[in-house]
Structures are given as C-alpha cells and as structure tokens.
View 1 (cartoon, one colour):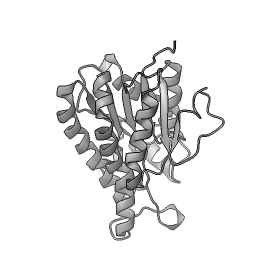
View 2: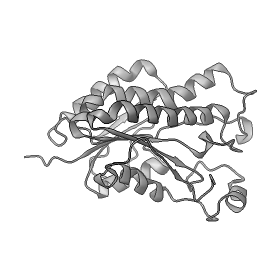
View 3: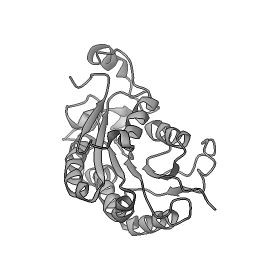
Length: 250
C-alpha cells in the first residue's frame, strides 16, 4: 500500500526560491509536483522529481484546461489520495531592456504587459480556481509569491512586473476572503533581494543603502516562510502578505 503524503504543487520550480522550496518540502516528506517552463533538471535531488514534473509555459492561457487535468490525474494517484495540501504560485517573469535596464511605463508594449500578467497573475487565479476542490478536500493552503516591487518603485523591476505583483497582493486578499469559509487559507510572501542567479548588477548598492540587515536573503530563508504558511503552525493566518526582505520595505 502506498504511503499517503501531503502534496505541494509549485510553479516556477527550476531555480532560486522555487528550487529551495522544493528541497525544503521534500525534506519534510511531502510529495512535490512541479510546474515550470523548463524541463526537469536532472541534478535535482528528489527521487520522484522527474515523474512529478509538468513542463508548461504559464503564458499559454489556452493550455490551462490541460494542465489542470494533468495535475488532477497526478493527485488521483494513491500517494496523494486526490488532495492538494498546498499550492505555491512562485513562477514569474520580469522582462528587461537591452543591457538589463529597467523596462518602465514608456518602454512597455501591449504584448509584454499581456505576457507578464498571464504568468505573474492570471495563472495564479486559474490554478487556484481549477484545483479548488482538491485544496478544499485537504483543507489546504495557497501561498502567492509577490515582491517588494509591488509596493515601491524598484531600480531593476519593470513596470509590468511591479504592477502584476501589486495586483497579486490584491488577488491574495480576495482569495483569502472567498476560500476561507471552505477551510482553505490564502497568504502571500513578498521577497526583497534574495541571493539567486537573477540578481541585477547594482544590487550591492541596495544591500548597502536600503537593507537594514546589510545582506542578501537566502532562498532557504524564503522557503522556510512558505513552509510555515502551508502548515498548522499558521492555522489562523489568512490574507496576510509577509515581507521577507531584511527590512528593506521599512
């Protein structure tokens, strides 16, 4: 008989915060189903990683019925028993101008706006709605990854990224209101400058001048907060947005 584990569905799992989150939940003996536009990375350490990976570009709205069906099929397998204990919406894109420069309001065309909002916002709403029954069955938790850029102008994050993250914070509140009567909690975390491969040149100046703790955050530190929001330790936390930025927002 298969051992039934709690199941996490995580988008944007191929690097940085997503990769650290997979490692943390796997170490806690959760089943982890991942969704990423990248194929499964062979160096990832969890045994079921390749089997439980779905390669999908979240910008492709027409594919969502298919991905929901694929996730439901995986959740119907004996090790998950049809339940989804956690949905973590981590996938995001942040287009840049040539040379990595910030893409501001005067530089951003309609196609960029649409692509960014598809991935950063609309995919979150569609996944949560499509998998609501499975979340409800588990009395599960949704965690949306917003950003410090959703609350202040950032020197590197573009306007489409920033406004999509501000909208995601609002969506989190709406979902918290709508889902909680059914036993599903919805919260967000807002990372600041985290030590990943996508840091922009000049981040050291932000660390020195704007972060009271005078250091970058670690992906594992973000993963720990995500895990907290997906467990009974946070059972009365709903509709919150937790800053994980060393005080950069103050």
